[in-house]
Length: 390
Image (cartoon, rainbow, N blue to C red):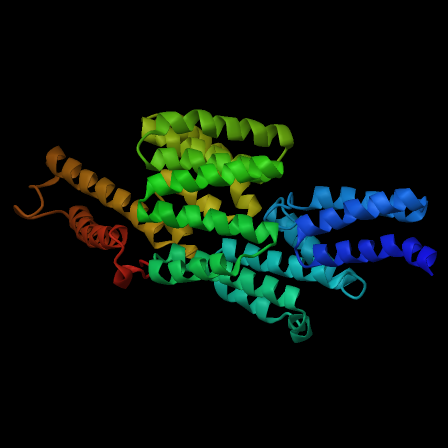
């Protein structure tokens, strides 16, 4: 009896390790699997030993090195096609966890394009039977909260965004992709509030965690891009230039094209801050078509921000980004009106008769001034002005 119990002891440990990993308890799972390996080696159970070593190798590679898109990241159209194929062709035989991850990734793609209604419709279409499992219900709920927090931040609704982020932090999600997206949203929230010091501290903490976990290359590149963008927004673009170039080089070596385009967008923004407008224009003209093909409206909005275009920011309901570009347009319209007046087309606006084109310019300036007022209200955190301009 004692011999039989000792023989099957490693299988009990094996099942316990797998269950702990399924519930996100990775440290306990690794400890149990190490004990399984030691027991199987002692009992000379080669089948259990081989399976345990293979599973442990898979666990080390899969967690926490999963990227935010749960393994389906890449070019947006291709990753969306992979998710659709998984649903249509292998939905009956594929594990439920993979189906849920691909479904949440499809919702994430919709949110990147500003289609929040479509994203939540995808999440609502998940079979209610899947919510009966606590792990799956928590994963779906966390993803829905992340998308709501992202939408609230883009609409400058800081009250709702803070509430959602606090709720997610209190819940302490164990999934690596949810944790990374939560950290990225925290940095975004601090940046939009103008608290750059706290944002830098959060980025450094996240970088230390990723280094300790030997995280995925994409996460490291994305974090470098965030840090470079922070330096540009904080008014010290010189420090951000080398970081953005390092992120671009790392993304190019790893052939992570979406990450490369994000890093180049950061380089373009830094070039604008440094006054290198011609170089920024050439870089934007080269990267923008690739970003448009990828379908990432957020990246397109960042690229077009340097080219003074607000259409993409309007489509994703990013009030602050749209107001920044409209403020630029207001300055251009004002300069064009003053130039036309000084060239002999008529007196300065307000001092006499104007030609038809100058009247249109003056009206554009008045409209732009109103937009600038809303822009200032948004920058000051006025929740009443957090509606989409236009």
